[in-house]
Each structure stands twice: as structure tokens, then as C-alpha cells.
Image 1 (cartoon, rainbow, N blue to C red):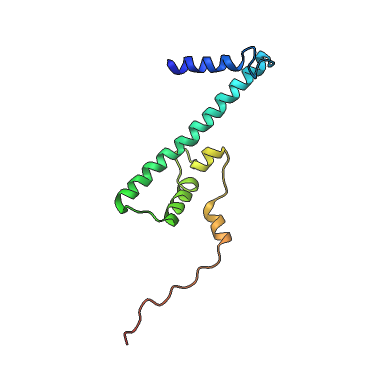
Image 2 (cartoon, rainbow, N blue to C red; image 1 turned 45 degrees about the horizontal axis):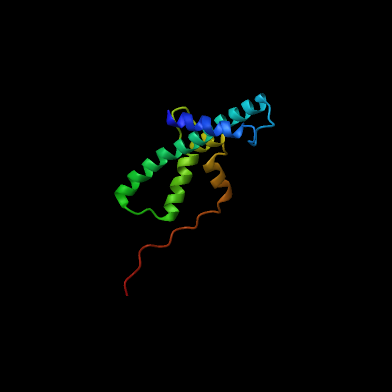
Length: 125
């Protein structure tokens, strides 16, 4: 309830006689409020995508206690572009509201051929 009062107080200052919105019409102020609600919804959705990832990283960290920066970046890419919800969307797709290109097809097209592994057995002298 206190948050609602504070919100109304701040909005009244904005649209008051000397406020920055004093010259705006009621319809302009209404449209600005609608956009503010829309942007707040986008922010809420973008932060909620991260909460599930943080829990997943916490579980992994619990088991091995230290994730290298390279592994952390790889896990971030897998989480954002590969893991899908039951509705078939990825975190990146939900965040950008657009389907990204297929990550593995892109990797196959842009990576050079992987060299053969070294011979692991060495003869002791």
C-alpha cells in the first residue's frame, strides 16, 4: 500500500503545474504510463529468465566448487540458446521475442575442422 501511495505522489509531481509533464495532454500521459507498464513487464520477464539459470549454476557450483570462466560462458550459451521449455522456447527467444538461429548449425558452419588428438601413450625411456 505504501508503494502505491509513493507511486501516486511521484506521478503527481511529474504532472503538476511546474512538472516536466505540465504541457502534456491527458492522452499523452496515458500513453506514457502504458509504455512504462510495458517496459516494466519486459524487465520483469528478462530478470525471471535469469533466476532459473542462477539456481542451475548454484547446483553445479555446489558439486565442483569452482567453475572456470570458459565453462561458465559455455553454460550460459547452452542455457540461453539450447535448453527449451515445454512450449519449445529458449531463454533468448523469450527475451528477444524472436527465434534465434540454430546454435549448433551456426557452430558447424563457422568452426574449422577439429584436429586429431595427440597420441596419449608415450614410451618411457
